[in-house]
Image (cartoon, rainbow, N blue to C red):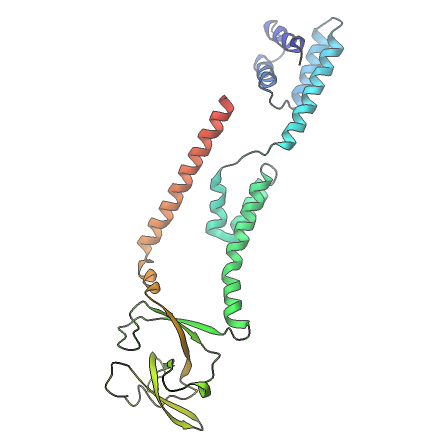
Length: 280
């Protein structure tokens, strides 16, 4: 870049020719190596052609065009960085938020637009995949139950979570297995007791008992048939259900407030870095 073009722009400004602020912006952009828009290029070319009368005009015009071309190529290579707050749309609204972020950002920050969409898509698919695996994959028909009342049996405590294999038929149950079943008397309450006896095989009927109970209670622990049987406990996760106690309206508001606060802090940091880059 020769100094002649910069001097020509300064001459136009000093002479009061054209829009002083626009010319000043063009001059500062050229000095900083920033993008010169085609509209500014055409504006500057017209002013130079009409108001500067010497042999250097063609060369100045050519320099103006070359600045625009190189700046445009640079603009294609550089990605415009946008606020990290855009990730919060897919975080809260999964695929819908990701789609909104994509269509808004795709022309100014395509990389972040794609990431937001993929993030929302993943959050949308995770529960669907888990549900499909647990319910439709052969041999994976599992159910999950959380202990909600004081359990005096099988070392189960309140907030323990038990995974049940509903794929095991009642005919395969043996003495010593811990099963989940509906109360034979009410068919409403769900119980978890250990099998202590096979009462009959046609129809298959079993008797259960709590480990800390002295004896089985009729109408509570037996008779358990296929109608009452739910499945066999294959393993338990201690106290993981305690998290449900924390999920209250107040805790949700606090969690959302913290997440939003972190997002605002990230956005402010992003703005500060952007301002520092522009001033450097």
